[in-house]
Amino acid sequence: MKLPLAIALSLAVAAEAGSAPSVPDFGIMLNDDGGQSFTDLDPKRSEAALRVKIRSLEGTAVRTLIYQVVAGSEIALYPTKVGSMWGWRKAPGESASPWNQQMPFLRAAVTNGLDAGRTAGEEARAMGLRFMPGYRMNDAHFSSKPFDHPATGRFWIENHERFKIGSAPSERMRFVANLLDYSHTEVRAHRLGIVREIIGRYADIMDGVQLDFMRQPYLFPPGTGEARRDLMTEFIAQVRAKLDEAGKQQGRFLCLSVRVPPTLQGCRWAGLDVKAWLDRRLVNVLVLSPAMTLAHDMPVDEFVALAEPTGAKVYPAVFRHTPFIWPFTTEPTADSYRRSPSHIVTAAQVRGAALNYLPMGAAGFELFNFNLPPAQFTLDAIAALANPRNGQRIYAITQAYASDREDTEYRKQIPVALSPASPAELTLIVGEDLTGRDLCNQTHAALRLGLHGLGKQQPNLRIEINGRPIYDGPVAQIATPVSGRESQPSRLNPPRVETYLQVRVTDGAVFRAGRNKLSLRLQAPDARTKVQVVEAQLTVLDGG
Image (cartoon, rainbow, N blue to C red; front, side):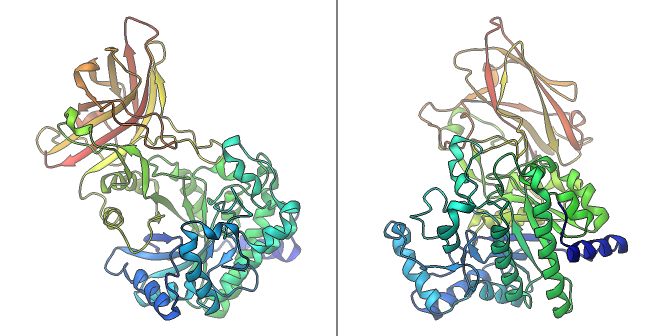
């Protein structure tokens, strides 16, 4: 597919020049979804409350605020001439909670011309933070019941029969069928109009704009994205041209950040030709993001290898949620696991992820869905990213969850079945060198496996790290049972941990900084014995 002549010429000039723009250090970025922008009937109080919320970042290590200035992909949080605004119609869903409480505030904001992006951006700049308005390219929050949902825009209502995707990647994800299909010129023109409006509106206070392709990574009918990737490259080129025009007027370079699937193959499947975007100097910041939970093993280095020659930077996303797990304890007992598990991320998990990605070339991190004002776990996560080597570190193998798709995500290693005939060979990334560390007195290191389906079976398990054994013995002797009263916490979680197996590591030389081979071999008289490994993590705690 050919690009328009003007865009093709500008790309050719940029490629010929070979110049790489100077991309600022965005440090720790926090992405707020803008969902609580307007919280009062009185416009002055509503705006003041938003300013206080943004000011809650003062004194933290956050250096960049990304603020979503459109609810979903259609309802602008500012006076718009392109999209829709809250209350543009009386939606049936407004009578149900929480909309029946929120809609009066949202309508009052529209009536009084409030601009959440302007307020948030001004406060961020006043604190010395960098600022990017964010836009979600195909947000699906409305799409399960589009005719009822207050965030359904006029463009969808008037054009859905012609322009919706119409098919879904699975029965469980039927909502995808109602998203707009970027194959259509009219859809791309409409969404480009919103992005151009955002750039024009905030150019004076922003350092760039972020386009979020992970809410949701479905722009085309499933399976057709890669063949239509040139359509999105043209779209990105047009956004780049608008940013360059606005940047010239402001006398400074404006960055384009894109939030994309965490593998190059996943990007291609979605119709996002990230390599072409980088080669043509169209994007400056890549935020690599899974869909739902914190990941410890995204292939960040693959993106860095493409980005570095172009001057672009890579920022892995850090999430507030993990699969449901129990806290680590150095000396576990049965009582350690009788309380409910948690899916709120801990500082130790964040430190481990950060230390895994920094050696791969990560320039910083984006906190996603950590809304403001910051809860204590948000403050803990920020502090952990600012100083990841200070405190407990957890290096985990990322678990799969029900909404994982290997087309836009990457194949998670666990859960994995384990039987005498089928050993498991897993990769565990450890972002520090434990060689020469005193793991008996000064540092505590332990490998913890979460198992499902063990029941009354008592097989032996041999555990090797990089070919060196660290345990070979009965599972039952080192198992920590979980109370049978615990039920499956979430349909998004893998099979629940029924037994924890924890092994103290006393020789740091078995691990190497970076990727490690974790081998698990089940030994049992009955060849039919089978369990699932649903959790695997190495915890490192200084202080013995």
